[in-house]
Image 1 (cartoon, rainbow, N blue to C red):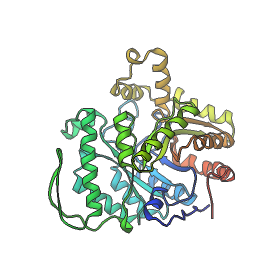
Image 2 (cartoon, one colour):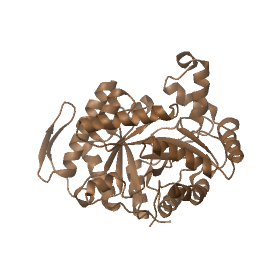
Image 3 (cartoon, rainbow, N blue to C red):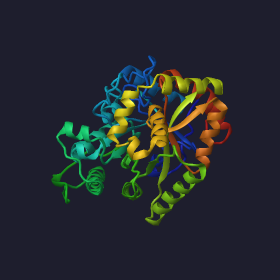
Length: 380
């Protein structure tokens, strides 16, 4: 299987399309972390070690998948497995995998408050040169208080996080594009006599993504980014379609285009019965519930704040892909679910599984051809 190459002549449009003509982009999410995104104790859970990451990248690249998206994680969540306790820093992870692959895009997930913009711009440019234009940036404006404390960094109030990230991103874009030395005099960031050469590959810049959920976060993405990640786990089809339409309309009002993606957690087996049984095996019978409870406590998701029914629902979803959209079934069912997401206007999905290298080949062999027959994926 080989990737359909995007025919756009505009280099930035080609970048935004991740270099392919696939109507539905598909990527793998969270493989830079031990256990990936499945909060489970099953022995086959993802190791996250380097050799397994390289093998995953090679499988995904050969199958024509579109991207790999890492989690920006600095500290594990504890529990019996120390969930996500061993992780790779994402820009260097991306650089290594870009050197091992030929077509697939690899993102870095970067906490703006923790990376000096001059260093970050240079790191990302380096990765982009290694990948000949296949590096992408997933920018994060704030997250776990415990991680920020580990760095000795005080997390700003919600609105200020995005004001800082705006300056951070503005400075980086200038370093990626301007040939002349410049000063940057922001409220938060002040830089003098900045030089940044060489530039990203091909005279363009990396694709930029963000997953802001609040109105301020989504406004930041619409203003600055090429793609926005939405959580659709609780939405109906109509809810998702309306949300996508609204985000795209907001971007067009500013003279911009933006693609909308979502995040899913998949259990795909030869039969629906097998898929559902494995889902229960990982996320109910062998979930790392102490890690799940730690994650929810950090997010202030308690019985008191949510109520018993919503708390239990979210607890089970957290165990399976950190509340990603559950996609559970045989190849026909999974293909139909993905087609429905595309019909709602989503450009793509970042998926996680319990063990990427054990489960991805079956998905590629069975689901991708079905998506091709539906007109959502192309081959050449």
